[in-house]
Image (cartoon, rainbow, N blue to C red; front, side, top):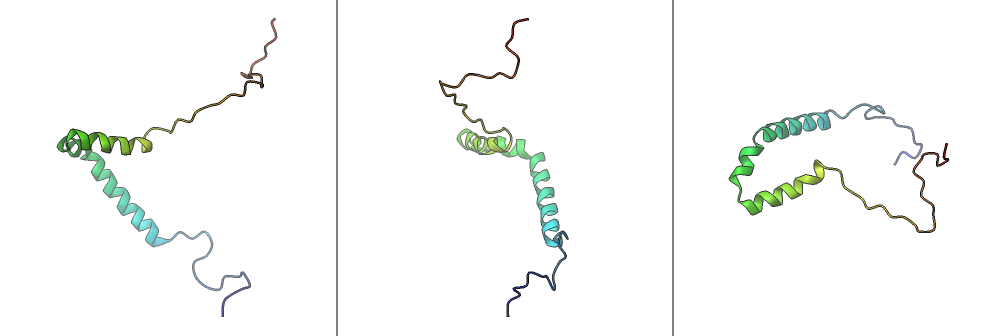
Length: 86
């Protein structure tokens, strides 16, 4: 029968980190750091077309995405400073 009371009777306490997830993240982080040390050699071994494709795929992880800004023509601009002439 399912527990419909909303009270936990077993399992991890709320806020307790999952040990397996922590271990997997540690292993993956170490693997990525090793690959970053060798990325120059990996890029040099690729054909120019493959190298450009890989760099294009990696750019979103390094540079923030640029979003366009629009302006309504009937709304006055507000630059955040007082426009009074002293």
